[in-house]
Structures are given as C-alpha cells and as structure tokens.
Length: 286
Image 1 (cartoon, rainbow, N blue to C red):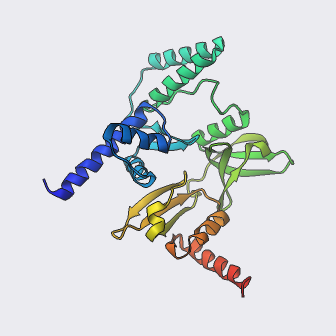
Image 2 (image 1 turned 90 degrees about the horizontal axis):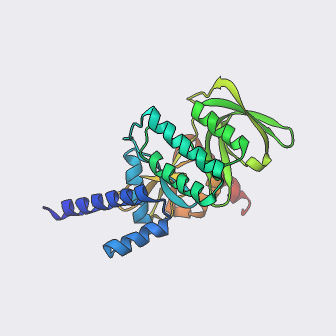
C-alpha cells in the first residue's frame, strides 16, 4: 500500500469514528477532541475535526451545531418504523409528559433524539424541549409545510415572508426568514404573532450563498461559523468557505477585518458591492 493511500485510509477511519461518536451522543468540539486523545492518543485541532464533520455533511448526513453541541439531526439511510411502533413512541412520550417527572422526560427526550437520528419519519420532542414558544412552533410548522407566513411585531408592524429555519445558538434563538431579496434574522422576543398563510413558499427565493477564500495563516486557524462549511481545500492549503444566512453588512465588516488573507469570490453582485463598500470606507480616511 502506498504512503498516500495509507493516509487516505487513516483519514477515512477517523471520519467514521467521528460519525460513531455523534451517533452515540451530542458533543461539543472540545469533547470530540478529548475522545480522540483518550482513545487514539492523538490530538486533533478544531480545524481537523471540522473537516471530519464536514465530510460527513458532504455525504448527506445532516449535522447541526445546536447549543454549542454537534448533533446528527437526520441520517440519509433511515429506519422505517411501522405505524404501531411510532404510536408506541408517542404513548411513551405522552406518559412522560403527564407524570411531570423531569429526569424521566429528559431520558425520554434523549431516547427520541437517538431514534430520530436513524428514523425516516422524525418523532416530535417531549414538551420539555427548549422551544416552548407558540410562535416558534408555528414558524417551525411553516418551515416543514413550505408555507409563507405573516409575522406581526409587538410594535404592530408586520411583514409577509418565507420561513427558512429556527437557528438555536448558545444563548438565543433566531428565526431566519427570506423577505424581498435578502435573508433576515428575527428575534422571537420582538414578535407578537406568527400566522401561516395559504401561499406556498417560492423555491426561487433561496437564501444567498456566499463563497470566500481564506489564505495563509488565517486558513490554518480559521474557525467555521455555524452557517459555514469548507467547500474546497486548495493545493496550497487555502480554503474556500461557503457561507449562508449571515447578514450582508455584518459579513462585509468581518471579511474586511481579515485584510489580504481573505477574498470574496461570489456572488458577483456581492463582489461589486464589497468593492464599493471598501471604497466608501476608505474615503473616511482620505
């Protein structure tokens, strides 16, 4: 076996081991690294672990970072439970909710999480889920149904938009919507009501996908955001990053901080706007 082929096989095994760990439990990046140190006597950086996770994503495995932990939301080859089996899970879930025993509900939720990683049809979480707000639940339903929504804010202003997803961070929940030609982040605290409209979401209105290249030292230490993934690793070690959902102005400000170590690649409209943005900024220092 050639040396290069041996390296490929070793990396493949590490990807599969990463997948095995995430099937068993939800883990933070530091916890994933510690497991490698414990069982393989080998230290991996955040960047290397991110590559293993993104390889799984490229294979169609839906891995999301929720509450700072990586978890398998869905696996492309699922187990097809019968209607009777799904009914049994629902009955167990209802029993846990009615008895109102916290540790029992948490254990049931953990069981459902493991089942949902393998199931073709996900089972709804127990009522102790982090998301209890009725507006968020309505928004999630609209996402599943691909229906437009009308969102009324507490200041009585309203918008009609297309729901994209519920983004759960370490300390906040954001509703991602597509309105007009841009994606927006909305805080549930500012929303009075979410109402599902009869109109279907228009598939052509997809959130803008931005590609940018990070180079040199930045590429070695770059930390991926929750809404990013590595699209390509160039021969010189530079990275092409795919970014979605991030506010355009915030993204421009962030990329500018990277200086010569970063290059915006697409879409072309963003490249032109970025140039104009930089030129307007430089005028302040003329």
